[in-house]
Image 1 (tube, one colour):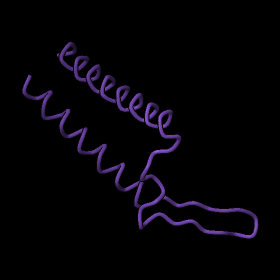
Image 2 (image 1 turned 45 degrees about the vertical axis):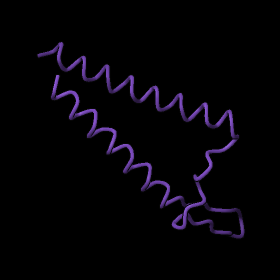
Image 3 (image 1 turned 60 degrees about the horizontal axis):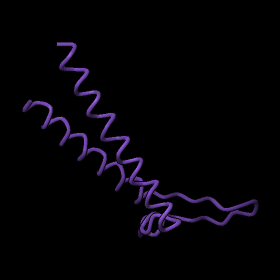
Image 4 (image 1 turned 180 degrees about the horizontal axis):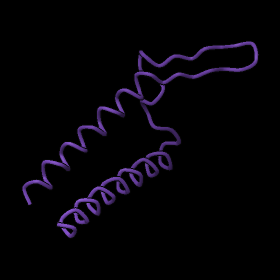
Length: 80
């Protein structure tokens, strides 16, 4: 039982690290991630003492993608 759980954790860590590497490579190649901060639900508020950026739509999209990846990992780990 412990070995089965550690394999799942190892797979999850591997997927997360590969996602982080992909994001870093995109940042190195393009300087910015192309769509981040430019979606219709991302707000930029100009205040007297600075600017406040609220990426609500981008946060929702990233949360959905991470949930989808977690569900895929969970379904694949149940089959093994």
